[in-house]
Length: 399
Image (cartoon, rainbow, N blue to C red; front, side, top):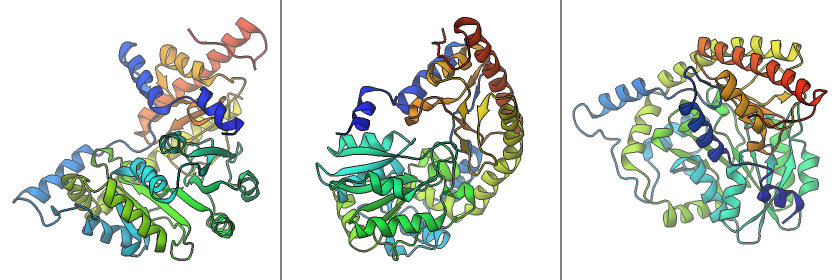
């Protein structure tokens, strides 16, 4: 493994899932009135989900309650094909997006192959690679714009690199990659016999059915999506992969071996949700239309006060600002929970200390309260550093 990969393994990048577990424990044991800014999608539309399910099953099992044994749900495929302008034959349903990542690795790569992963990025990409016996390394998406620079990706390739992995919208920054850049990258990688896996779970925050690469035109591309982020419906564990040709054939064959038992009930309900997607899209978009102006005003205030460095406006439901004068953002996150009752994700969870991920897909009043707490906490933290250790820029461990 490379030096960067070894650094990951030694703990510079901390586990997102473990951090969330610890943060929730701290929230439960602390004072009331906590405001969580770590969620990365709209809240679960539980009432809408219950109503959709009740309508579907009111008179008994609906037609959509059909077998999904060793096949994708036909209604889900039909809805996805229309929504994203993808041929039905290029779609495979999965038990969520994380499973889709593991399936892509297992179907398309072999032990000893190298996966090149964006950084900062979601740790599941590297974790799944490690579990599959693959080697992995990183290319940098540089702050503050977190662009995908094609030359940076190509220069990081090795003779063993068989797949590049990135997210669009980017997790954690919410940045949208231009389609022309993705297309040029896909072509350059195809010339080198390298696959391109694009995690698109946040893509609809850039617009319903936002455009993605045509997998027929770019046959080395695999696109992944999920109900979890699109509609806040983690409960359904419904994801999908878009691919074509030999790539899709290999994905299907692998799925038939290891992901043949997806939930018939969950995917039935997912099909009913997609049949009523307009309601869920309207609900998500109404939250974002109210929350984004609040987020941008409050965040701009923190930028003006030199608490954060961040490029505005926002595109998605998350952002990833640098905290001015702070490198140990894991300690900062503990401080903010304990002292100000606000929860943000430390940059160490994404391989970039000194930043925090903020989720903004909240009720506008709750979001405003959370961001006001964040501003107060950052101000106090900076003053505490100066009082304890001198000039801002050094780090402390919050107690």
